[in-house]
Image (spheres, rainbow, N blue to C red):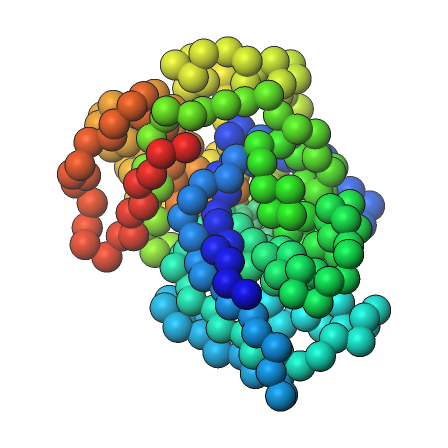
Length: 269
Ligand SMILES: C[C@@](CO)(OP(=O)(O)O)[C@H](O)COP(=O)(O)OP(=O)(O)OC[C@H]1O[C@@H](n2ccc(N)nc2=O)[C@H](O)[C@@H]1O
Ligand SMILES: Nc1ncnc2c1ncn2[C@@H]1O[C@H](COP(=O)(O)OP(=O)(O)O)[C@@H](O)[C@H]1O
């Protein structure tokens, strides 16, 4: 069975407090975007896993797709599978690609072996693989709170907007980003802020990680500025970086003044 794990962007991200378990509470709108990997899982005589596309750092045994298989294996007597992951979404970009692969692996295994797990149960498994992971089970716009794994559907529809995502190749680990954050509270609810016109988001919506990371990586505010110069109504870093996105009304410009090694994705929301 073949599927296409997609990325997400964060629209507004407030890190509100540090928790007793060492994680942080946050408030953010997670919005799916169609920058996609490809993941195929087939029944096989023995287990195997291979990858093509962008190289994923680290031991393949620690790949989140395998972790998803092993997690379900603990509760279900799954037959062996061959998995193939074609990696397109850049890593350490704040786009949640690894979490999406893991969530899609759970979804595919659920269908392939008719495990009959409902969305809620799949989300519970996903939460064990990473905070972001449960979002990709639902995969529609949500307001995420607590560890970023408790969701409320968001009444936000950006159909017709074009999203441009720029990844400059700077790898920022989630742990590094949270390590330099100062928690803060938004002045009013995120739902209220998102109800305002996209044109005013520039003045009212922030990603708290920008404050912590922009002084350390000056390329990042430069990219954001260039997206605004190109006509973006709103531009922001996504998640803990380092990808920066811009939202354009209708079509976006074709050319951007970025170096060749940057990865750029453009698509309709
Ligand atoms: C910042 C966000 C926002 O969407 O996304 P990304 O930039 O990673 O895409 C998420 O909170 C990332 O969630 P995720 O990438 O799943 O993180 P996890 O694997 O659960 O945790 C990695 C590490 O980040 C820190 N962490 C993560 C989530 C959280 N709410 N508080 C934390 O302090 C912890 O140090 C943890 O050990
Ligand atoms: N299938 C996978 N795809 C991407 N990264 C993975 C995968 N499995 C494990 N990882 C690890 O997870 C880390 C975070 O990846 P990713 O979720 O893409 O980034 P981010 O959390 O910034 O959105 C990677 O640096 C990599 O070490």
